[in-house]
Image (cartoon, rainbow, N blue to C red; front, side, top):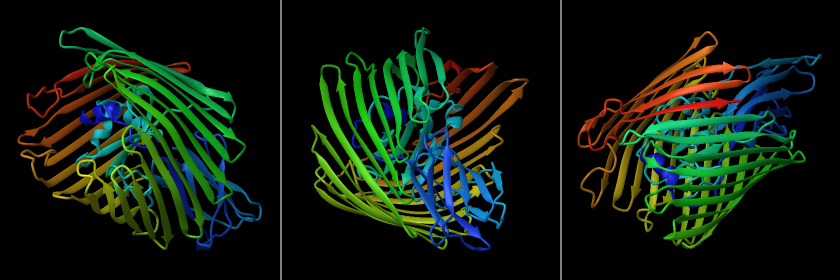
Amino acid sequence: MRLAALLVLAFPVFANISTSSLTGRVIIGGAPATGVTITATSSALQQQRATITNASGRYWLGALPPGTYDVTFSLAGHTTLTRRAVLELARVARADATLEPNPDEDSTTSTATTVSVADTIAITSHFDDHMLDRMPQGRIGTASLAPGAHFNYLPIVDGMATSGFVTSEETIEQITFVRGAPPVEWDTFVGTAIPARTRSGGEEFFFTLRDTITSDDNDDLLHFGEATVGGRVVPQRLWFFAAGWTGEQDYPFRQEPRGMMIKLDAQIGDAHHFDASYNDTEQGSGIEPFKSDTASLRYTAAIGPRFTSEVVAGRTTIGLGSLYEASTEYFSGRASYSLGDHLLTAGVSAQDSDAPDSRSLFASDRWSFSRWNVYAGLRYDDGQFDERLAPRIALTYDLRGDGRRALSASWGEYASAAQPQFALRTTTLGYATAIGNSGAARIDVLRRENGDFWMNELQLDARYRLFDRFEAGATYTFVDQYESGFQQPAYPEHAAHVWAGAELPIGSHEFGVTLLQHYLEFADSIYPTDLALRYSIPFSRLGLMIAADATNVLDSDQSYQAPRAVRFWVRVRM
């Protein structure tokens, strides 16, 4: 649960960009198709986005919110094809098409989705809404299942590295763990980052109520209540989302969180989009509570078929009761232009706070040709750890040209919080493969070096989902490390997590169960077991979910193992 605690209490660092992208290639008669119009529509978008293919038949749509998209390919004198694509947070999705000559210009639609493992340069583990809802560790704690030593990581929520406002389970929609090879747009304070996205409004109104019940050491029942509401104010132009939470809970640790959040999404014309958010939270921490409030504004522009820009600005204030208070102002912006097979990006970021101020400049080129994706970037930082130039390069090779199997490699420099006088140099090698239409597996080897510290890691991540009824996954990490001054390993030498879940229909009802088995090897080996039970009941337009989560059900007394914890929760969703 160390990751969950960090997500709640981490000190803010920077604003950042964490959206999704869509790419692909169009073929006609076995040759690349130039000038094909690609249009993307989604319930996550207020206005459609469009672009055209280049001379290689490729296209790129960036700065998109994650969600399920209908991607339409059209060219005069040919069949219009619509394909389904699922965009995941901080990842690149892919939708290819083969168009056939057709003087009647008929239309066809395919709702099948495919998984591409060749287009996302960074090494990531993604957790979607479906999985987060059904894992026994809760939405925030589930990110700790990602492989890796989980060191020097930065939580980024809605593009802001903020504190304290992810204490509500109902607000979190997606989480992606960036395990290696982040691009230069990502702040260099860490070698890994955890983007999370909170819910937004939409065209349809929705409302949820949730009560989570846990018991403390005295067997007293603790209640933690959460409520969310969202919908449209002006159709296709202005959406809202609001959430509030308060109460007590003893999961994953004793806390008394309370807070609120409000978000607005506004579309101005066809090209300009704004979303603004404000949250105010308080986290009980002994006598002096931890407090945080954050205000942020994101602007996205899609001008023409090839140019996009994104800007995130905000201010965070954190405090520990009357003992401490600090404010930080952030700014991060980037612009991207698709020029032939190149995606050129440049941007700036800045932080003003009670700590040393910092300024950064970055530029990169993503070049796609044949079966290769090549990425090269350079970042200049000044202020927080003196001056530093941080080069980063990465590449993927699509083994069959369909995005289903890929080799990857990267090398980059990052600033280290532990020893800022040294650059954290990271080298990665990996292989990834898609499994069916809804699964993927990848294996990566990482080497990190920082002064007199080095770490070698072997990481494995595999997932598979069948008909949204059955889901299985496994992650594994082997760590070989050296750091002077440490008498004990900071991370388990071997760490594995294996889970399997099923959702079984019972008439119009549904019963779900997920079993999660851990294996951690410190001085001794420990085997915590977690269990999640779900029962869903539909009532007209309402859905009732009754849930129970048990972590460490065997209640081992190992010093590295969390104590047994059981929680019950009930949610009503419209």
